[in-house]
Image (cartoon, rainbow, N blue to C red; front, side):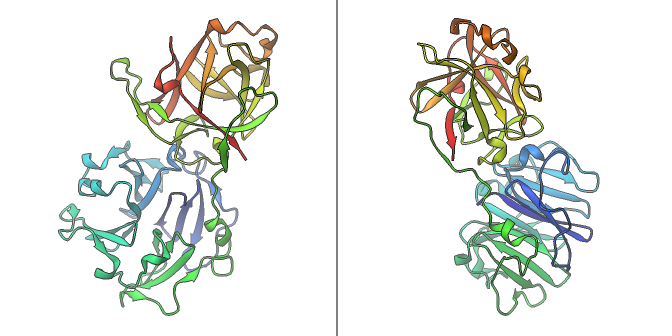
Length: 385
């Protein structure tokens, strides 16, 4: 399932799922009109690049929410002003350091009271955090059966969203598509639960909540590409620093994605990771094929210096040179003079081209020319089914 989260603000509950979100008025059992909406910079400034990395949200103050990311970082977000309070930091560098052993295991979070919060882990486990002591409780990881959550059954799946509906009730959504109403005072699940998350019980959210927004991908087997095809690019080797003296590669499964700008933050491929690959010339004897790439919104990829951006005008689309001679991987080259579509009848010889290495620059990605192929140059190209 996609990474999910839920948090409360004023009279509303916000639920994140699959790169989108819905807004519910507490107690109304009905989603606000116009939802779901994307998690993008229009609706949630500064959150777009994290939309597939948020694994949990925790209310800290009436206006501030702590977002936990899958890579072990966290940051505070001011919901009222819709801006980040600080840059993402490793859990180890914050008061949440005792949560660091659970990176990759946290699936949801819930503020129980002023002193305690619960962090739900995969496989029916939970840890309690003491805000006064600023640490995980001494008992550490516990099974649901050993806590106040003993009515929860691990067979229902992982807890993915938790939120308060009133002062007396809490709702927990599970990865299986079931949900439970939990009574705070009695510290037990209400009778006749769990129930299915569907349109009857959660109008405007049931079908959306259980829908998987990820693209279906398959390996691309053809060396020469003669027609337009829909593709996605993953980064099996990703250079993580623009500082040449500290440049190193690490394995990851992220996908190149276009939002407001090209980023390398998608942990699963969705519609914004999909590109229309358009051949604009014949495949050379060296396997270099000139192409342009068009994103899902119809904009074309281009480059300004090392910055990869998009353009509405077809004539300004960057001509990339695709090398498919690397087995399961491909390499994108570009010409030093940034050849554009409008000059496609004068496509230069491949010897004028250099391989591009996609380099993380904060949360963005830039494409840096290299004199030779490196680990960061290797992309995996998938066919979007």
